[in-house]
Amino acid sequence: MDSKYEAVIGLEVHAQLLTDTKIFCGCSTRFDAPPNTNVCPVCLGHPGVLPVMNKKVVEFTALMGLATECAINERSIFARKNYFYPDLPKGYQISQYEEPICEHGKITIELKDGSMRDIGIIRIHMEEDAGKSIHDQGSETLIDVNRCGTPLMEIVSEPDMHTADEAYLYLTKLKQIVTYLGICDGNMEEGSLRCDANISIRLKGETKLGTKTEVKNMNSFRNVEKAIEFEIERQIDILEEGGRIVQQTLLWNADQNKIIPMRSKEEAHDYRYFPDPDLMPVIVDQKWKVEISKMMPELPEKRRDRFIEQYSLPKYDAEILTSSRDLADYYEKILTVTDDYKSASNWVMTEVLKNINDRKITVAQFPVSAENLGKLIKMINENIISGKIAKEIFPEMLSTNSDPNVIVKEKNLVQITDTSEIENVIDGILSANPKQIEEFLSGKDKVIGFFVGQIMKETKGKANPAIVNELLKSKLESKREK
Amino acid sequence: MSVTRKEVEYIAQLARLRFKDEELENFTSQLNEILSYVDKLNELDTENVEPLSHPVEEFNKFRDDELKPSIEREEALKNAPDRTDEFFKVPKVINKE
Ligand SMILES: [Zn+2]
Image 1 (cartoon, chains in turn yellow, red):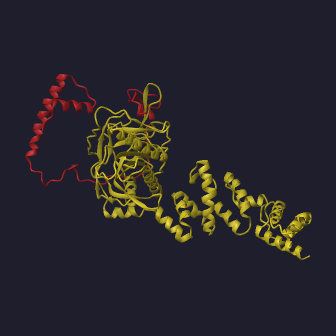
Image 2 (cartoon, helix red, strand yellow; image 1 turned 180 degrees about the horizontal axis):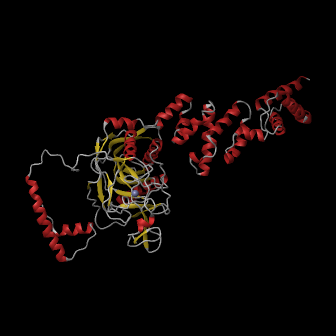
Image 3 (tube, protein in one colour; image 1 turned 45 degrees about the horizontal axis):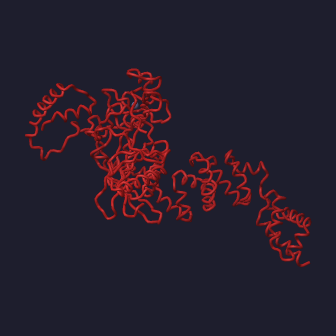
């Protein structure tokens, strides 16, 4: 970025809340249901129906407010946001405008240089989602009302971010918080987390904000970063060429890596908000606030610090293990079987995460149960198998999630720790390789590796390496004296 | 308070209504009559009165997050002016992409 300029970025994030039913009716929120089957007169917007607020939506949103240090307003009200679009049957969206439930919070991000920065939250409010329009079939547009009335929480940040990277970090942190709270699955690709960015640029040192544009349609974390970078560059180019930024809504096109203006209607948005007379105010008094705060789980930073303290893990390990609640839960479940904290961490950070990333699956979909991985680590520590054998049977665990004890028994892989048995093998190898013994005696220590290899081959990797090393060395040394 | 013909046109556009010339004239004068009648309320001193969004003093009318049966799709699509087997059908909306 041209160092003359500074970008100013604010994000509006919509998070779909993980309730069973919609915000104002008892229809299911399942997103894979056949079209127009999770519908009723309320979410179809029929005349004369009354919306009734889902209590859990209030609790989830207030919980997010508490997790981001917002003030929870004792009184909040709902408003109608009026606009016409076929996927909005009522002709208005029920949202909160004046008096939202949460205000004035913050999310702290850690920058690459290790410094911390607070990104302000202006407000968090509750609202309903619209339906889905399907444009690409025939000459007409098809409407599926299933998603109408799915509860959303909108989190509006202060324009506190200055780079695409900061926006990415903020969004990642936000996702981490909602998934820890268990109130949203955080999946941007499937649309359960959506992000719009307000972007403007100004000369460094300038305090007045420049004209902003709004960028939409960024459906992955990487796309958010790329789109914002692109838009900042575009605005700088315009100003450098003596042009003027036009306030407009832009769409990110991920396939072509570019931004295109959304065809805007002639009139500016005029939503004519007014209080919704169908919905009574929500009052969150002190008593209810305390009850909601009791639902608060251990948040990422706290859990990370506890991991460092309780399991003596390096900060790096603790950071990765607590990056998602599922992963941290998985790790701690391993520890119900083994108390080798560091080995468990190593297994999760290498084999488990590598597999999850390679297969593009979630922790929940990872085939090896934490219990079985714990048993595997325990078997290594109890000298039942070597680390090498463990790595060898891991792929089988991946495909069957069998108990490693069973696999080891079936394949007869139990480690040989019986010294006389190992001694027999060593004697056999030594007498079959007199040339290599000569080499050893003439000072070539490297040949030890050859013998270890032969012994392991003979025992199919089952000999305890420590015992092998010890016995082999003493036998070779004894040859020297003769 | 009063409205101009231009404002009436704008309000009509927001409501997706189209009017003939004489209708617009008519509505402008009718709306202004109504507004001047309502203007009477401004004679009251409301300095110390909180705005009222709801006429009844109810609050926290909630339901639990429990599934209720939805209606049949056929029932939902029954009154639609146009439809397919599964969807509502509307005139082509300008494609966002
Ligand atoms: Zn419904």
